[in-house]
Structure formats: structure tokens, C-alpha cells
Image 1 (cartoon, rainbow, N blue to C red):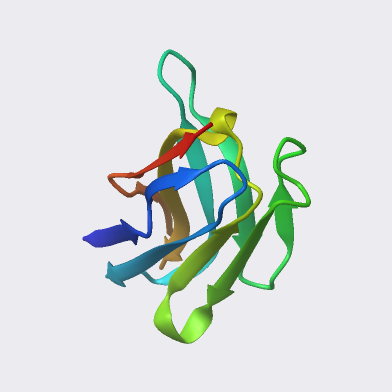
Image 2 (image 1 turned 45 degrees about the vertical axis):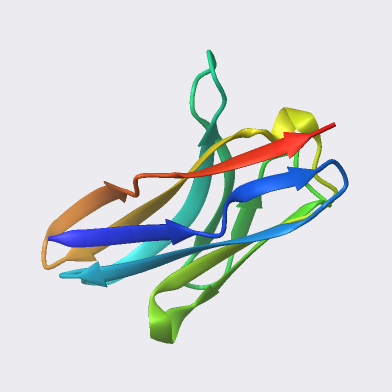
Length: 119
């Protein structure tokens, strides 16, 4: 079993910042990539940012320059620094982990953390 626990969401005014964290635990195996997705009401879940075990990042154009993803390999934790927030950034932010254990590759999701940006 793999568990992902997100934290750091909340209510913030436009222009503000937050730091989201996602800690992975359990039978993780070898982490391939960790990342963040978000889902706003009435919309599909979309990629925000991912980071590979080697540190390569992929960041959505809509947040590039405002959001930064990083990870602490020793703690199996990924962070998302979100800055210059806009009301349209309001969503539930989900952590995703892709890992490999022996010959199996698994995809795991956290329960999400709410980010609400007021205008």
C-alpha cells in the first residue's frame, strides 16, 4: 500500500502564495515521477507540474513562472510553491505518484487539498 498525504492548501487573496506538500509512504519502491494536478468545479482534472526522479520538470503553461515544483528524495516528498495566485487557480490540488516496485508500475493519487483564491 502507498499513501499520499497532501497539505498546505487554504484560502488566500489574489496575489498571495502558498506551499503545498505531498508526502509518500508505504511500499513505494522506486519513484519514477511525482507531481500535482488540479480540478476546478465543473472542469476536468489537469496537469499542473511534475518532476522526475532525476529532477526534470514539466510545468503547465498556465502556471509557468508562478508555480515551482521541487522534491526531497530522502523524504519522498514533493512540494509546489504557488505564487501570484489568481482566482482561476482555485481548485482541489491532487498529488500523483508513479513508482515501480519490482516489475510493476503503479499510479497513486492523494485525496487532494483545496486552494481557494479570493479576488
